[in-house]
Image 1 (cartoon, rainbow, N blue to C red):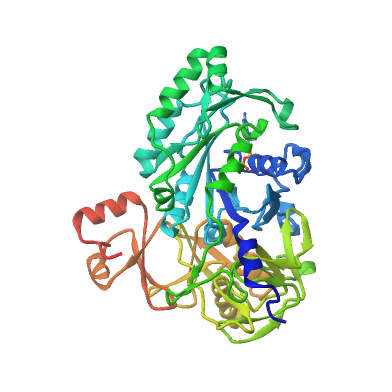
Image 2 (cartoon, rainbow, N blue to C red):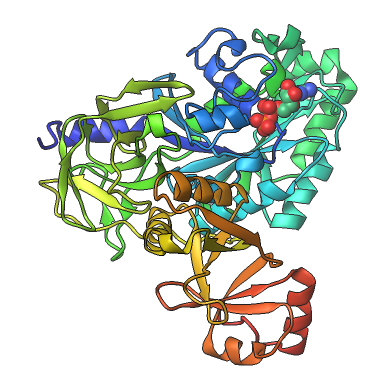
Length: 523
Ligand code: GDP
């Protein structure tokens, strides 16, 4: 089956799509704002319906038994909802203990991100890491300062933090009337209106609000409104070019828990976040959105549970229309297969996905031959691959060896498979050799996933020993020469032959670069 919809329809459907992810540090309120966004978009009427009260599992998919047992989520879920004529795809970025390469890879599949900041904490480590990935991938960022209903930092101080620490100038869309913890309302700089709120109990319903003109607002709270106007006036205004180049970021304030500022965030997603555009193939040619169907796999979910033996490949649609049942070609192997089982995955529910357009995420079931980074396309498409998944900064390293040496063959096969799937990065050091490769991960959960799958899928239980390194740097031949004999450093290689230096910590790295100013200057 080939694409059966006209190019104008595909363009129309693409223009109304927004594919976004929320990037934040644990506890900033990502689950809460996800619910609030869905609530405003009227997918659900009560915030409690998306996930159980008091638990953060639910919106994020936890359909695998191992996840339920451990109370964590390993799955990236994509939540799709309609809003004011738009179709919004909200991709989950797993956080907490399950922070892994998947968290980063999700950012290759979105067109914009919402950076959620806790007003009392400012920029936190995980947010910084995710922001840097957005910047390196050119994914523009909208900033939402959350928890304004609680005591927090000063609004301008938070803005300075963005400018000074990540060189991102906030361009306010809304500005709080009243300090953090004493919020009266929000000044909307787009139309100079002020919305006053009354608290909603427990966030279960929308906060009661009343929107008035600036003059009326000044009559009610002259000091607070004047202060909001003066403070917001110190900052620049939104500019599409600098937004796309990640120099500026539209800034909003609110309280996800009481749904304050969430409607404004949705309207900014509508008016400012980009819709899917042409994607560049690996050779640099952009593929128009109305070309025949194509997409790439940005995440694999392998059956961690024996009874649940399926491989789910999450595909971001980049061009054309995906129709369930259509035959697609895997670009890497040239093999074609039918997509009988295609799902959209939302929380615990998997519903069948019949059609999808650029920006949408499709979960293909039993797609074990697909790997992270694979391109698939319609049989009538000219082909070509999207760029391979980049290597992300790993910070956790362990050696791995097989428990039972008679299982060496299964061990090698399993490790190679996990590497290809993108579950874990593999490095080989000359000292240790092939029999004891090094697993490199963004988050420690990746080791557990690898151990589980090696035992249950490849029948080769493994022994994992943590290594005392926290930094990996691509190393050139001259770097390797400079590092000869250095303490707290190990030179390793990827399968493609490129060298990676593992370094104990930041202090060791600083000492090394002080001694050798040109070290790592090529990377
Ligand atoms: P996540 O870890 O980023 O998904 O954070 P959650 O959404 O689970 O929120 C963490 C905690 O912060 C929960 O107790 C929420 O109820 C609370 N929270 C989230 N948003 C707000 C807010 O706007 N105001 C207040 N006061 N608490 C919030």
